[in-house]
Image 1 (cartoon, rainbow, N blue to C red):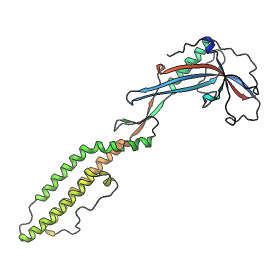
Image 2: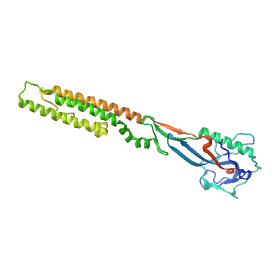
Image 3: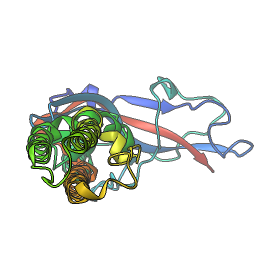
Length: 295
């Protein structure tokens, strides 16, 4: 466990709390000093998986315990202490403490041990982790900001499956394009039907290419065109148009399943906490802190 090696004079350093006017609720009251202890620490959060190395300088305070009693670091004597509030001498308008205070080196060490144990148990740095994408948020990034930032990764990870889906439907469309037409019609009608079929296949291929490869977000937002542009296809090739509708519905169902699964994975974003080890805590200063309280 990390322990500071301060001299006895350093361990007995004294500081007086002098917060700015209006920062507490004691204005108008007669104040007197009450003894507390202050530890200034440098804490370093490290996590190789999240690629985080973050160092902070922090103040921790608690009321001076009675000799033999454990210090309660969960109850700070001063909340949100700012460095500029610390003074090297008391204010003349605040009454001194009425008793003699003496803190032995052993008591300082006990309080330090209690503080280190407290920090290891309680101090956490919280990030966010997407298990589906195996990505971590950045330091200070909110969950919403993190999800927005990784949205591009969602579509990038879909690319191989989207390309395979495109290969599949293009092969099916080619089969429709090459399917034999009725032999009972005239050559002129046959040419007309073939033109209608090719136009329908081409339109559907363009549409499916757009929503699968070019812009799958358009499908997600419902910005898609009709299947083939003909509400009443010629009776002779009605089965071919039914096959086109089946291909379209099949591609949309597969695309919807892929997008839904991937977005669900991305949305599965859980808090990821990084704790402290004793070796990541360095005591910079410890001092007797006099805190003004109502008399």
